[in-house]
Length: 335
Image (cartoon, rainbow, N blue to C red; front, side, top):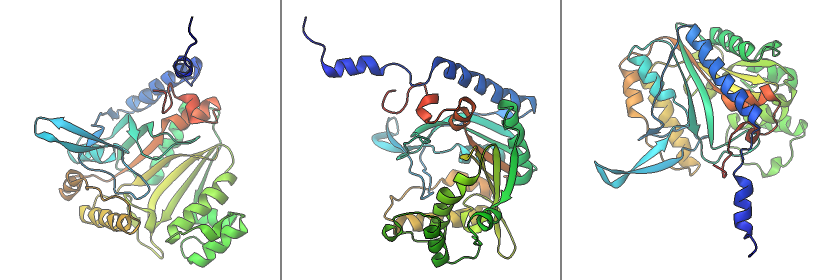
């Protein structure tokens, strides 16, 4: 008998799921529990397309692409897989559908690591007539429903965290002060970093100096700098603040929520600023979602707050997983 080629032997090994069967059963129960939570509140589940002719303009994200060939596109039409169902869901809100939720796969190119996968499961929901503070209450209620042991909860403004952990005011500190704080926190290789703006330095300090100190349980961070408000309302003041929050569970970023901007002209201005930033950084130009902008221009988006929550990371917290592959049936490369 001839020996089995190494490639064939590797394929025989690689077919098994990376998550345990018990974890996959836990995932199934979690999805059922999430749906039960929203349906008990009368919130409608929706489903929107994964492919669009538009892409995200967010410089921190890169859309995966595909090409459709068929009727109307014999030479091929470029489509982008959504990084979030947000724009399509907001079009439904503009059409008058009321409070809604969706659980779906989303796609982000270039993301791969212990907490990241290019394809992952996102829970996104929108609640009419509330702001980001009241939405934080509902997010906390959801977490306690599916993870009863996670009862400890803290809430801090973005400014409070920086003052407490680093001793600087992130809303007014100049870049030189942020660079000095990064050195004082022990972040290495600063001489090789080419960070263009304050927000890049703030993100560096948040991820390296503050997030590791957030501890266990739920930690909500709210009222971000106005410069970090791509889709959130900005509350006037000195300085103005983005009506946005993030939730960390046991120190891991889990959810990002907004008191939603419903001004079409202002949203277009922000998207165009992101496109200019992309050009300066040498990032690919992308088409804006004109249907979404038209929906905002119609004046139909009601006062609402929305949030996106990573289902895989939530499951990781529930089962004590250290790598996202431990909660996926088949990780990237083995599907």
